[in-house]
Length: 173
Image (cartoon, rainbow, N blue to C red; front, side, top):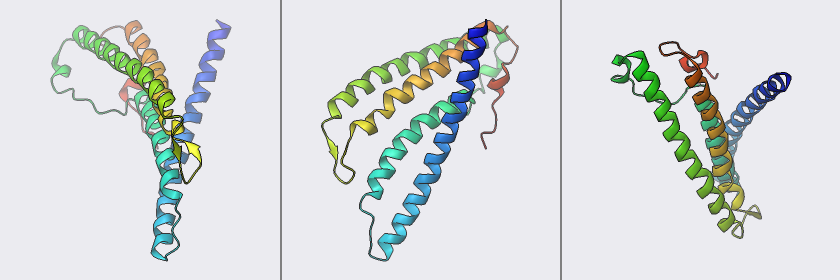
């Protein structure tokens, strides 16, 4: 049981780090694009800024998506589902999470393949591989897969009609 507590503590710290990284990437992209626009206006463009923003944006999207999955910040249409009995809602939630996990497995596999095939291609201004951009897909999908699996296990263990604490959503700000 001690190992499980240590794992939970590690995962909680990892989640906080991931949120910080997503926040820093968003702030960095915002500042970079603003400064780049100003520099272009005064005829001193930052040729590399667009490529740095591309890499940062790809990683921000996939880390931010995992943060959203953990915090239930994803859009859901429950206008019909909320009228079903609690047992049916639980069953549908489990089925939807399983479908999401299957899709994320496809993203991990295809993202890995895409990363390998793009590794030789270079981002000219940065002198790094495009593989670093594409690597965000399998890494982010794997993180989302872990988060969804945790939520699925919690859902299976929770009685029908009882809400899971983080399923109610939370403000990430």
